[in-house]
Image (cartoon, rainbow, N blue to C red; front, top):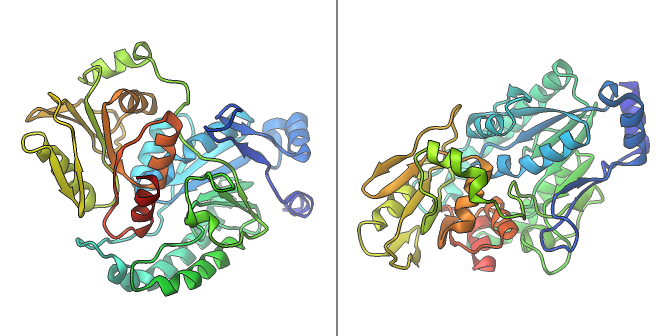
Length: 386
């Protein structure tokens, strides 16, 4: 790895520039490579020592995988070879988005959520297994880097995916963790612990903008940044250019879907909370237009409402919509089709996860935001974006 060591000594940052949808400049992934990288690609292109990138999202919901889509698109546009490393639904999702890419099943940390509102006890009980899991994935990464000839690793919120032999990038919007009431005093200590992991990476990318007009609030802006950390702008798989029905009509009709829906509910998150939310939203269609979910009350205006529930269950192949009790269910939708239905819906219901916030921001829509029980980050994001 002599060339890799030389690279690290002289070029600490891959200078990618992600532009905000609020910016006057184009809101697409614009990759402005360092002079060193441009010269490497110009001279040797795919034969370059620094051309293969491993992208590895966390498997805690689909949000970490969806925001890797613009990163992968940008890397491919610049001529990089990308290898996807994931497991579960994130792997299925990214394989559908990029069927031509090489992939490896890379099992990540497993988390078991409690049924109730508080997850503090569940998280504390699992802390020893989390730490062992971080060490295991760190060791496994070294094997994958060697087996797949990787030069750069992009880890979306996977703590253990840094490697001294390659250029390691960590992606997170949550530099600090919002603690529940009664444990606020721990926030500084948890921030220091997270900072300890981040310092092992060559770079930390925060998908937000600097300054007060930002999306993540305290999560990325409350405490000082490490020198390896920089804001790269929001990341969304959606386009700022509206999708046209003509572009998606054939696929939508093949799946048995209508042209438009009054209400589009995008379900996500860990079980059992994903299934609970799906049931509650479906129940609203044949009852009063008020839902009480996770102590969050909201009203769907009583149109002669058509309801589409996107279940957040990617599969190896697209499945036809099911029609039950006046509700259309679809396990998963391709990116363009999902954007079409969200941009055309009268109302949107979704989790208040940060990736959903960035998607809504990109297409200029508001939504009924429902935090996943026990995820204080989502509760905080709902408050600042309500």
